[in-house]
Every structure is written in C-alpha cells, then in structure tokens.
Length: 565
Image (cartoon, rainbow, N blue to C red; front, side, top):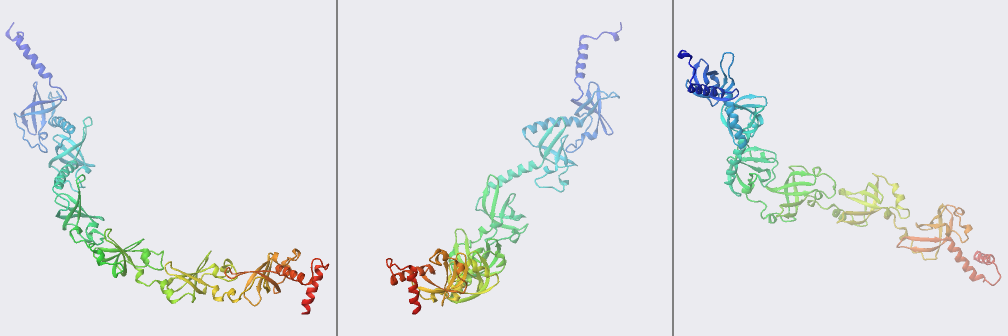
C-alpha cells in the first residue's frame, strides 16, 4: 500500500477532530469574530473560520460616529445569518452584529437607569429615529426638548445623551427621551443656582415672558416670578404697563422655595413704602380729590397718590341711591372729591366717602321744612302700611294708614290714592339718623276731637243718622265733625225696638254719652242709656213702686209736664 493511502495517525485524527469541533462552534444567529481577507469594490470579504467566508457591504462599516475605514487584516465581529448559501458562502452582517452588541449594552444601561449616547438621523411619523451605536430607537416629538421645538435640524447628526424610557427586545422597540436628560440637567443647574441665592438679595435679571398675572425674569439660568402685585405700590392692571420682554430689571428676591426651586421677585420692595405714616397724611374727616381707578360691584377704588388707593363702599356713594351699581354713579378715570372715613395702616386700607361731600338731604329737609309745615309730592308707592310720597332731593316721606283720615279706617281710605297722584301733607316728624320723614294727610283737615270741645259722660247730644247698617247706626254729632257708631244693642231699651231699620239717614236722634276718651280718640253713644235714665228720673218725680200707678201713667205724666214747659 502506497504512502498516499496510509491511514491517519492518532495525532492526525485528533487534529481533524479539533478542527471539526471548531467548525461546529459557528452557529447561525450568533456573533463571531472574522478577519478581512480582501476588499472588492464596495464589499469586504471576511473569513469567519472553518474555511468559511462571507461578504459584507462596506457601507455597514460607516455611519454616524462610525467613520472607520476598513482594510485587509482587520478583525471584526459579524452576525452569522446562514452558514452557507447557494454560492457556498456564509451570509453575514456587520450591522446586525453591532445591533446585538448594542442591545446587550443598552439593556444594562436601562436596568441601571444610566444615560446612553446616540444620534438623531431621521424623521418619522410622530417623532425621530436615533442611532444608539447600531440599535435604532424612537424619539417621540414630545420628548425632544423641554419646550416645543419647531426645527430639529440643528440637533440631527450630533452625538448627545438620551434616557431610555422603554425597551422590548422581542419586538425590537426602544423609546428614548432627550427631554428627561435636559430636565435633570436643568434641575441640577437650578439647585446649584438656587443655592447661591438668598432672600432679600437684590440682583439684575432679564424679562423673558409676560403673562396676565406677572412676568418671568431670567436670573442667569433660573427664572423667578415677578407677580403683578409686586411690580409697584400702585394698582397695575397688566404687567406690560411696567415691564417689557427683553428689559433688564433690578429685582429683590422676596422668597425662595428650595423644594420646588420657585423664586418670588419684587420691584416695589426696592422703593419707599408710601403707607408709612399714612394716618398723618390722611386724617379722618379730611376732604380731598382722587382719581377712580377701578369699579366693582361693592364699590370703587380711588387713587389718592401713586401707590395709595382708598375704597368708596357702595353704601357711602349716595344718600338716596341705595340699590344702584357704583358704575351708574361714577366712572373709571373720573376725578372725584371724597372724605376720609377710616385709615388702617396695618391692613393698608383707607375707607372713603363720596356722599359725605354733599349735605345730608334729610338734614336739609328738616332745616327747610320743620315739623308742622306743609309739603307737596307725588305718590311713589302704596304698601300695606301706608303711602310713600316723593319729596325734594330724592327723599321720600311716609304717610301711615292711621294718618290718612280722622274718621275712616286707613285700609279703606288708601284705595282712593294711586301712583302719580300729587298730594299735600303735613310734616309730623323728621329722623335724620334713621333717614325717615313722617307725614300726615288727615292733619290738614284739623282734628275733629280737638274742635268738638269737651263732652262729659252721661251728657245728652243730638246726632244725625249718616248710614243704617245691620249692626247699628253710623251717626255724626250735630254741630261737630265727630262721627261714631251706635251698636244695635244700644238703639233702644226694649229688645223688640233694637232694629236699625226704624231709623232713616238724615233723621235726628238724641243719645247719651257713655264714654269720651280724647287720648284714645273715642266717643261712645247710647239711645238705650238715655231711655233708662229718663225712666229713672220719671219714677223719682212722679211715682213709686207702691203708689199703684202704672209705668205708662207715670211716663205719660212726665211727658205731659215736659210738653207744657
């Protein structure tokens, strides 16, 4: 047997076996090291061992942050997709190898909460794609910056740190954020800046933004809020009245919140406080002028000097207009004369009065129309307790029901009046403090009780029947204006004669006064009492109970005697 056909020795077999084992270590779907053995145009030929070669496009070796030039002899890692294709070559990829390597590093960074470096290289729907050294991540538009960014072009192709928000290897998804990194950096920067600031410190800042409630001032990397109420001692309707964007202003640090890093600033604190010694400058009772700056439902604010405002409460605006909006009495920017009512330096409040600059209309009325004088006015309103009469200077007087008529009830008389009627009345009382004027209409006709003189109890008077009613008679005492009512039970001694229909209007009758109370304004008459009194008198003069004469005989004799006289 020739040497060419000799069986391999034990050493040769071991070498073949080791080579076979080495060949079997190359598995599909794994990353292996290979050597560049040749470069043909735009392809690199790479030997991955076990006499197996594959081809990788040169562009896979370039890209963001990967401008390395590949050459023969370089050792590189590649991803084995298939051991052998139809051409007998291995199908390998440098991009997939890099991606596998990156995923391992990114997962460790994600678990540790560490930042990773990447490059924004393309724009997609809803955001951008970021190259994380081979692995492609998605950057949502909302995570690009702290504030919305219109143009991302300056950020593309620039290596910068990102924070991984989410990873899903099975789906191959990675979501990153640039905003989180900026916020953390900003927070660190803010903490450092805030640590160097102190309350009460005066520094320069630049106005960055203006809102309805104030302005944000850049203090050199950190913003402070200059509230509208801290811009000036005077009332500021809008911050733009005091500052403009881009303006450099000197501010005082009022308060620092080290937990939220919020800084409150003030400009007025750098100026003298106009409220110092305010009581001496504005004594109570002083009369002065000011400008209306603001009108509300409850009153109006008046500027007395820059930084000093007082309030005219709605109740202090007019003597007579009680339920009117302040805007219907005065207007904004109007110059008005006011009186100082109260000054509170601690609460920084000044109460002003507008009506006090005018004479109290009730005082003026009392001076011009003393009690007993007669006035004329229009019926403004009718209520269940009387009439309201409009008088001069917008004041009203009231005629109570009891002061409408001497004889008739007020509930009946008030129906004779209507709104708009002009009436005359007598002034009965003026209460300036309570702002009340009492009037009387019946007083103009005179008091029939006062004019009637004095009536004594049991006095006999002649009456004229005014009206016949079921319950009795309405009568007037002759030669007076006094009227009264004789009850049915008082019309006769005998019950059978106590019928009102026995009498007729205009008929004259005699009756006896049973009660006369001038204070209570009451006179009570009785025909029955008169008949009983006459009977007693006749019995006393013409007979007795044991004479045998009848009551008719006695009364007849008394009547005959009276007739002869």
